[in-house]
Image: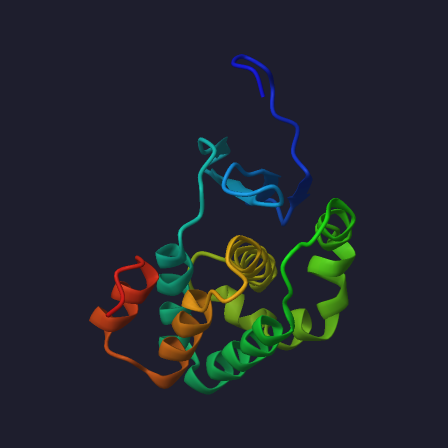
Amino acid sequence: MKKGEKEIPLFVSQINEKFIIAVYQGAFSEYDILIKYRQKNKDKWSRIRTPKHIHWAVDVLIKMHSDKEKTKQFLDFLIEIWNKTRPFKNKEEQKKSLSINYLLESNREELKKYEDLGEKGEYSIRFLILLAKLLMLQEKTNLETAYMFKKLLNSLKSGEDIFEIVSIATHRGR
């Protein structure tokens, strides 16, 4: 892309009245994706942000404090998704995977089942599932043998100490 040209997102979804998430072509590899979002606070949209694993992890920790058992079930659900996630091998797979049906609508039951967890913390369950799936696709597309996100899910589920979770979420794991 030439300097000054406007980037066209590969995928955009308004999650609710508070969040918009978009996916752009990344630069790391041919099928890399770059995830961005905006958040509305007091009727004003934030600047465009790149979500970090630590933001996601902190929100899950808040939910864990509120309802430990249900949050662990939610993490089990995400671990199942991790195990099924495959990297993009071509543009057609990328386009198919970056559809609202693939990313969210196929999980209507889980959206409803875990919806009340979204009342705690910053992020709704819809946002967390969408963001988790995108982070998984991004990680596995750039390195098919990657495991950092799964390691984070497992450490959250097993109740690792906060320092270990932060270390994993900020890519400074042991």
